Amino acid sequence: MDHQLWLIALGLIVGAIGTLIGAGGGFILVPVLLILYPHQTPDSITSISLAVVFFNVLSGSTAYARLRRIDYKSGYLLAFATIPGAIAGALTIDYIPRRTFNGVFGVLMIIAAAYLIFHRDEKIGPIAAQRKIYTIRTIIEKDGTRHTFSYNLRLGIVLSIFVGYASSLLGIGGGIIHVPILVRLLNFPVHIATATSHFILAIMALAGTIVHIANGSFSQASAYQTILLGLGVLFGAQAGAWFSGRVHGVWIIRSLAVALGLVGIRILIMAL
Image (cartoon, rainbow, N blue to C red; front, top):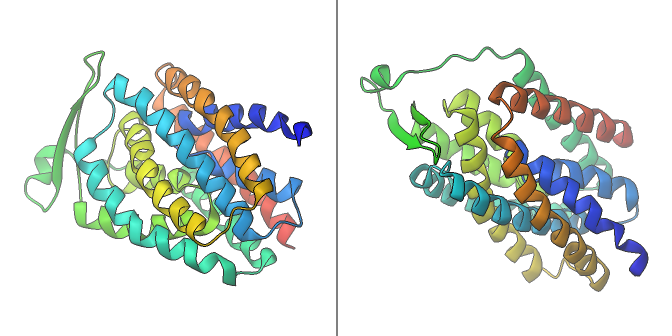
């Protein structure tokens, strides 16, 4: 199995890019695994990816915690809302054929990319939020940057349940879905959204991975692949978090949209 040591390098790339845009990196890893291992079942692919996502977001979250960008209060509430969906997704993946899995994955990625590109950013200020049922949060980063924003917590919880199911089902961790939701629908600043998303994903991915382990989804070969990829993402996540502070939020969103679109097109072609 030594010929698979290149998976460490792949994990490094997945960890760096995933952490930079606040995703677990599964949106990169799943299509790569689908291409490299065409005969593996969706259950095996998603279990490997979700476990690697957990290692990635755990490492990335520690880096973001040092930068003080995580909204812990919101993160805990939204994270626990994802757990029922994550468990349901892990339990239902066995019933989905490979071609259907690829098609659903590709379409969702393309829709998310189009939404990020064409949706106009309409922010709701904290003063206006006081007159509605909005939660107001203030986060001060390590460098003194202050963020005050507001969001609809009820909407966030409902959307997080869906994110938990979709991400566990597809094995992508959910950050590539959750970050657009946090930024566009819940009014989070981009850098706070990417950091908080990582924190949420750590809890959600752990729940989904535990279910996969309990179901016996990991073979000896897939466990070995997971370990190699996990070693890479642990270091890649630290690099991604460091680089995120040097990239403007607009470019993070644009990069996320491009990545979503390319992945979606590639996987959709595979499903045809």
